[in-house]
Image (cartoon, rainbow, N blue to C red; front, top):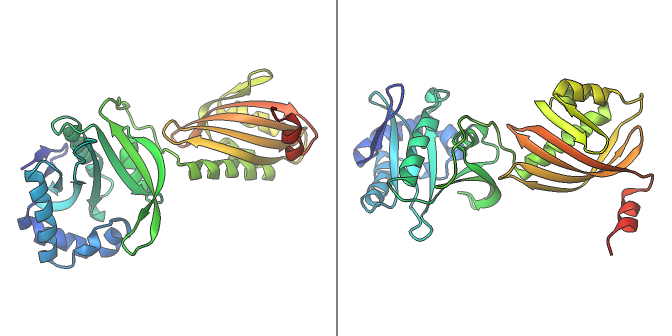
Length: 312
């Protein structure tokens, strides 16, 4: 039996078949909520189904291969944290979590998951813990981001109905240092490209307030040979000095490392002049913190510029 005390009076303990009625009642009472995100909840159509499901984890726990812990507030079952079977050779494990809607917003899942991760990386001698979330489930994604997990990327995964869905993969290694505080949202490759598109559209509309809002308050922005700006206010003033000209940006080639939150982008800018260039971007908390661009004034179209300046 695994048990932990959570701050605020909640507790975490192994679920057993005797917990099946309470667990089934919670799942059944919020079927749409759970079935939207969980890959296993549709299997539970009765207390008997739930008891059999929990019995699988009880057997795994006896072999030190995995477990299913319930999150309790007093005597009420609020949700749970699952450690799926541990890979014996790679010493890796995947965890998941679930919570009734009336218990959301209290930090229960984050605190419970932190204890489970520490238990796996310590007592269970696991080297890597993985958390997989649906791309659109921002509440679920916030948990690994608060706990210092790395965003490895997006992968296609089979879903219950045989379809394929995009899921975000986060990992934490036993040698990783946990950040002292939450760093905010981590962006996937697709979300980084969407940020670039918002910047492009904002510049086209000359909506410089919207553009500046994509940058951190203390952003550092510049071209090392020409100009440097520190802070969102200074950056917005730089954007607004557009000589009354239309602004157009085209992104050409985009490379993004989700784990490091670093991007490199080739682009063409048409405004006060036409530039072709490359920008290196660093993100934190879903905002741009560093923007270092290298530009070349050139009236050629991008395709001609690339063809005529290509390395031999």
